[in-house]
Image 1: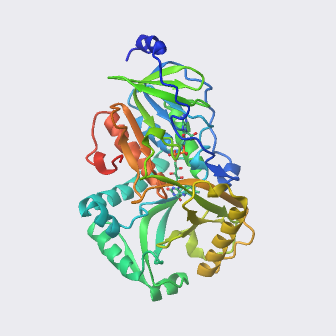
Image 2: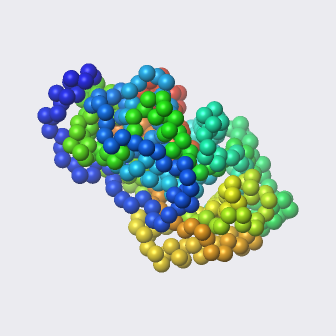
Length: 422
Ligand SMILES: Cc1cc2nc3c(=O)[nH]c(=O)nc-3n(C[C@H](O)[C@H](O)[C@H](O)COP(=O)(O)OP(=O)(O)OC[C@H]3O[C@@H](n4cnc5c(N)ncnc54)[C@H](O)[C@@H]3O)c2cc1C
């Protein structure tokens, strides 16, 4: 849409919607990343024009990857955030970048069919590899490190389920090795009935990763403006009008909502739920087994524990999710959850955290099948959304960036329908 049309739209009455996207404190207490350098980026206080080809709402990892997928295509791109960039959930993430999604492949196949489940898992593995290439091609300084993953049997998925899972993954062309209790104990000194060892994972500093991608996008001409809140939207035939908290009207050929757990209110549904989660980081150079430098560990249990190491020798662990939206704000609960996590890690591995350097809690979005929702907002041809991310948020953000950018650029991805909005 030409710019003068955008200005002429200033008189269009947009409905007064105070909460176009949900609003909530996304995390409580400082995460480790908030204290490390390299996780911030300078922005403009306002948009410099009124019409863009693409406006991306949300400057977390999803918005950053979305911008990255669209650069170099001669598009005028604006990215806005009502917070400082990287101050949403991306700052609280424990950043285990896994192709193993929360629902095991053999279980997902029962829910969505074998072929579709295989595509989802294969796309996840591809997305982790894509992220690795991005970090290396752009030389992003974000403590990114390729790792293996160890998935431990637990009360949700025991040894038998893990054997079925390895078979399902091998059939899908994904590498996975079944470890029986004896092998697991011999190699990792962990007492569980079984585990799956697989490659294609990584970890990173999520704030540095996001900020570094945003910095690259900025150099490539993407405008980043904050604090700018999108208050309302009006889809037209060939464009979308957005109103901002400052009272400006902006227009774009396409708008992408990358607003994380603060999803569009109109898309609130029973399928996605906001729960509470807890995480902590030990002091640096903690005494721990050498293998933990190379592995991400998680378990098929409910509630679950996951952990990994950092480049300065800390251990980061998290889990203990609760199905209550506001529980993460409860201080007593944070102390209890920290103790549970620390004790569980000690029981499992003998690692003694002592008093953690950082303890934080956060809102966390989940869906029953662990899958995100990526697509067009119903009845809005030019409005896209990437939402419903759970424990594999970063991997799904990369998939969303590939799928949605393809749609905007006019070359539909064969997997476009893989993550429907429902
Ligand atoms: C404790 C914790 C641990 C996690 N661990 C992992 C993990 O190990 N591995 C993994 O892959 N994932 C993990 N995740 C999930 C992952 O962190 C998230 O999926 C990811 O950070 C979401 O990124 P995002 O860019 O979509 O959202 P955010 O980072 O929240 O960014 C969205 C932005 O949108 C902005 N916004 C919202 N509404 C508006 C509006 N109307 N106008 C303007 N701006 C708006 C917000 O201000 C926000 O900055 C974890 C999450 C948490 C909380």
